Amino acid sequence: MLKIKTPSFNQWVQSFKAFSFVEKILFFVFLALFISSSIFILNDTYNKNTITVPAYGGSFKEGLIGQPKHINPIYSSASDVDKEIVELIFSGLMKYGENNEIKNDLIESYSFSDNGKIFDFKIKENVLWHDKKPLTMNDIVFTLNIIQDQEYLSPLRANFQGVTLEKMSDFEGRFKLIDPYGGFLENLVNLKIVPKHVLENIPAQNFASDKNFNILSPIGSGPYKMYKVKENGSIHSIYLRANENYYDGLPNIKEIVFSFYSKESDLKNALIKGKVDGAHLTTNIEYNHISYTTPNYFGLFLNTKNEILENAEIREALKLGINKEVILNEILLNEGHLTSSPVLPYFYGLEESETVFDLNKSIEILENNDFELSDDNLRIQKIEKVNNSNINQDLKFGDKGKQVEKLQECLSNFPEIYPSQKVTSYFGNETKEAVIKFQETYFDEILKPSNLSKGNGNVGLSTRTKLNDLCFKGESTETKLEFNLKTTNYSILPNVAENIKSQFEKLGIKLNIETYDNNEIKQVIRERNYDMLLFGEKLTLMPNPLPYWHSTQIFDPGLNLSLWQNEDSDKLLERIRLYYDFNEELIADLKEF
Image (tube, rainbow, N blue to C red; front, side, top):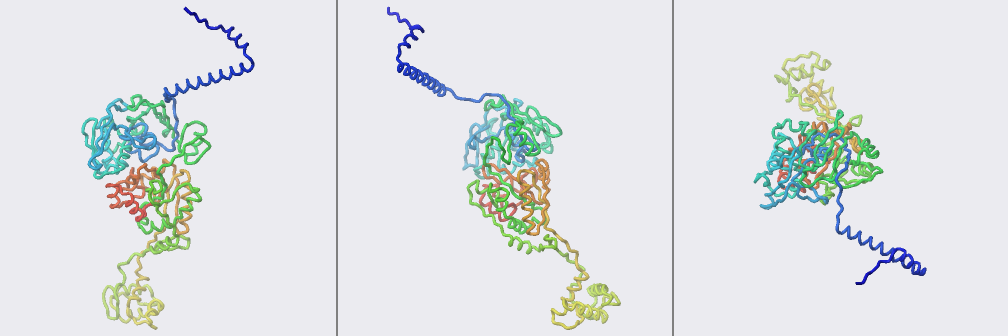
C-alpha cells in the first residue's frame, strides 16, 4: 500500500528558498491571483443564493405641520395630516404599488362584467382588526353606508354616488355602478374600511367628534396600530407600533412617531437638529431630500354666495385683471404651471387652457356693471331705490287728486317759488305760477332741452323728472369692490396674496388680507367664512374633480371651496366623469382661477 506523506512547514520553507528571484515573484503573483479569484467566486456564489432583506426594528420620526383631527378615514381626506396617519392604521380594498400602479390590498381577487358596471370581488380571509376581531364584508358594507349617508357629511360621499354594494357572503361582495368609470379602482384605494363592531352604536352627530376613535385609539386593520398619544394642550406626538397580526406580513420598522408643529420654521429646525428623521417642506434646505411631482394646485377660490361674486361678469373681470405670468416669474421663479382649470392639463396630458390677462377688458366689464372709480381710487356701484310715492303722471291747470297733492307738497319746499305752500289737491292759478317759476329756475334742465324760452305751467316729463329728483328721490345704496382674502402662512402664499392685492388696486378693487396658520384656516374653511380664499388642493392620481366641485360638497367637510353649484356639471361628474366637458363648463362659469 502506497503511503503519501504531506510535506512539513520546514520542508515548504526550504523548497521556497531553492526558488530563484524570478520564481519567487511569479509565486507571489499566482498566489495573489488564487486568493482574489477564490474570494470572488465565494462572494458571487453567496449573492446568487441569498437575498438581502431589511431587519425588523428601529424607529422613524416624522414631523408634520398642523394637528390631527380625524384619524378616521370617513373624514381624513380633508386633511393632509390625518391622511398620513390613516394610511398606516387603516386598509383599503386596493392600494398603490411602488410605481403608483393600483394593486390588491384587502381584495384577494376581482372581476368586471356588464361592460364595467358590475365589480365582483373576494376579500382576504385572514384579516384581523387591531383588537383581533375578523374583518368581513359586514365591515365593508357598513363603511360604504356611512360614507353615502348624508347625515355623516363625509367628503368621500360624492365618489360613491350611484354606487351600490351587495354582500354575497362573509368574504364576497358585488359593486354595481350606474355607468362604467375608469377611476373606480382608485376610489377603492381611498375607501379605507372602518370596524362595524366598534362604531355601529355611535350616532351620526357624534361620529366626527368622538375623540376616542378619531384621535386617541382608532381601530384599523393596517400595518400599524395606535400605541400612545402625548398631549400638552394640543397633540404633541403620536406613537404607532407595528401590527404583529398584519395580514401582509410584519412591517420592518417597529415604531413610527409623528410629531406636530405649528410653523414650518420650527419643523425645519427640528429636522436639522435631528429631532425628526423626515418632514415634508415647501422650501429646500441643506439636507438629504426626495423630490416628487403630484397633481396639486393653488388657486384663488371665490365664494359665489357673496352678493357681488355671484355675478359671473364680475368674476370674469377679476380673472382678466390678474397677470398670472407676473406671479409665476416674480414669486414662483418659474417653478410651476399656469392654468385656468383645476383639471391640470399639463399633468394629465390634456390641451393647455389659455390664461388671459386683459386689464382694459376687465375695467370695461366693471364699468358696464356700474362700478365707477371714486376719488380714493375705489370702485363703487351706486344704486338708487325707486320711490313709489313720486309724481308719475303729467299734470296741468284744472287737475285734481293725489298727484296734484304730491306736486304741491314738493313745491312747498321752495317758499321763494311757492310762497303760500298750500296743499289743496287742486291745480289752480297759484300752483301754475309756482310751476312756471320752478321751470324757469331750472331752465337748463327743463326748458332748454325742449327749446322753450319760458315756463308754460304744465308738468310734463322733464318737469316731473326734476321734481322727483329733488323731492321724491329714493335712498341710494353703495356697493364697494372690497373683499376679504384669507390664506395661510404656508410657504409663498402670503407673497402671492400681496401680489394679487397690488394688481387689484390697479382695477380699483381693495383686498383685505388675513393670514392664518394651518389649524386656524381649517376653521375658516369649515365655516366658509371668506370672500376669497387663496389655498391649495391635493388631487388624486386619477383626474377626479368630483369631490372638489360637486354641489353636494359645498358644506363642511366637503371640498367645494367656491360653493359652486351647477346641475349640468353635477350630472357629468356623477355619470361618466367627462372631464373635457366639465372643464369647459367650469371655465365658462368662471368660478375659480
